[in-house]
Image (cartoon, rainbow, N blue to C red; front, side, top):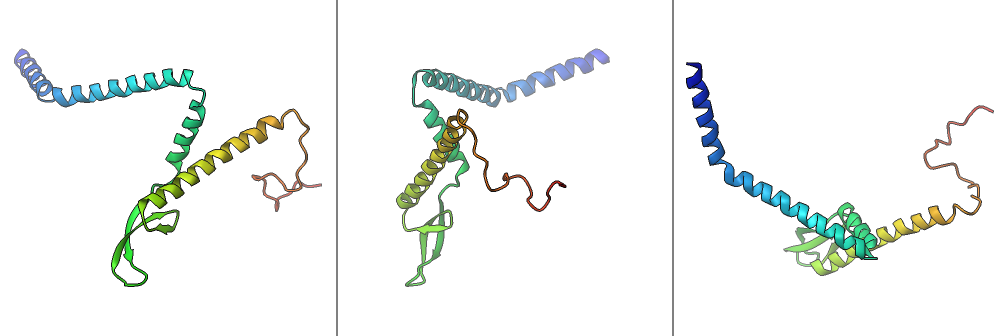
Amino acid sequence: MSNLLDLVLIFLAAILTYAFHKPVLAGLRRFEARNAERRAQEARVLIDKYAHYRQTVQFVEEQIEEVAKVTVADERTGEPVSRYLFLGVYFPDRKDAEAARYAAVIEKAREFYLDLDRIYLSKGKAQKPSAAPPALADPSKRAPD
């Protein structure tokens, strides 16, 4: 009886494997394609001197919200019209909204490089004490004198 149950379970597993083999293989192929693309991109990065800038811009693009298409009432007629929303500002067309988004992405990437310059170029010089307390310190809680 035990052998019969084992045989039924093996057949059931074989049937399930056959039934779901195409989606599983497709998933494995997609996984392998993503890995191959990642390896190819890493190889391109090694010879591209501007790769760091591109990666910074891509990273910042992930942090900035996307342009959203919204329907609002027209200011003059009251009819519903499509507008494009980015950072709380309505734009009449997607091109203007995407341009504003791209400008915000580039500005944030530039801030990153300015911070890098400020950190690494000032290491050789003596740090000037700032008048303000550090950003994470609470000025209301001072150490006893």
